[in-house]
Length: 276
Length: 270
Image (cartoon, rainbow over all chains, first blue to last red; front, top):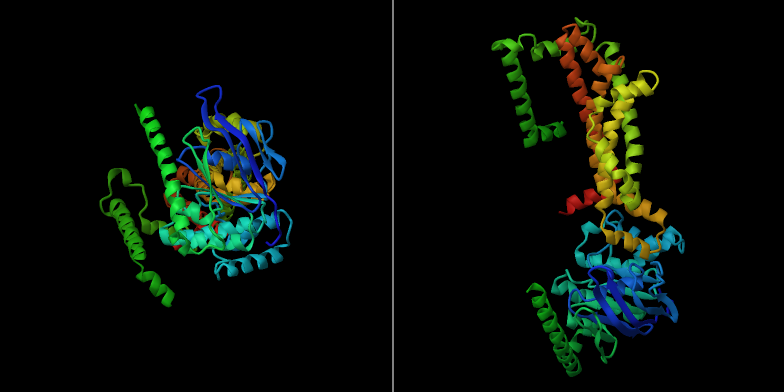
């Protein structure tokens, strides 16, 4: 887990048009930003804008129809190229995707074992030590359905991290959690990140979450998604919860809020037009 | 002893007992006390039990005679052979159909046309094509169980959350891994529902198959006993079939629970 990974992602003029011959929905247009290696980047924007399209394209689930995406200088995705999904780019899903038929430990070791990177006993030992390190004991033989959704989330993140991905992508992973569980998750994620920074692509609606976790917050516009603004979060790491009381935090929040509000209003009006 | 007490104390046990008593006494009442005109020839439950448990039965077959078990064995072997075929071919086809869009498009309409055909309607062709007596009987039993298995397996594969496939790919799974670690375990709950239905259908079809094309077996003897007006035997064999079907169903559930420990954990967690 301590291997220094690269994982610089460059998104260059990326565009995505669904059904170009038919209804022609432009989901993403001329979208450019970078995720530096080891940087925590959150992407916020109205629902239904192309945030997930970008994530899915980096992951290898989807394609773009214009522009290109590079990883560590090599072409990852373009209209002609789709790199199949792999353990260097692991996704943590919005609805949770732990295999319900595997125990916690079987879930965590799944990646290294099928890639034949580790023998099963070795991987099991590692899974248990990972679980213990994040304060989860005696859960390794449980099935996901026996755990709270917060614990399921943590296990899913460990299942991703054990592969030492270059980039980890989380698509609104804490959306379904209550406020307390969410704050536990934030500190859990920050601890793991501080211990071993790797590139993070984090999609969220929650501005506080975005600021608290990230080095960079990318605000997207209403569909078609473009980059509206990139805000650098100059808060020192490791971060503690009291950072939200600082003036820098409050200023960033106010700034971000006004930008997002503007976009939300546009999205609302566009929605009204569509309804009319 | 305490176990028996606990069992008897369970409200379900009393309900089941009450239901049984009600059923058998109505049967007795209708055939012996009331003797409705059309019920005249139907034996009452007591004479069925007497014949069933007689050491020297009137019609030569009871719990204490060898032919009874030979017939049971014949029917079991035929049904289970057909069921095994349905599991192997039905589950395979269902998985392939659920996994490959192209194959699904090729086969689904055919499956939907063949599925509603009553098993009995296959008898002429089965007898024409398949040699001997056993194969047509087994085939007729197989065919209906097969389609029930295919359909449920297909539904099972389609029920799997798409994110599980994506997550597996992210973690480095190849198609083979996805088959064994996502598709099969993910569809198991539906497959086992299908197998219970298939087993039921198999026991229903075996009787028809044995009556028309068979020799030996419970279905065949129901028919023969009826022709000889030995109605105690008919009813005895009917109940035997009921028990065998029930035990088969329990066995499938048992195997299913062994294979799907996570489903059990989910039920408990609720």
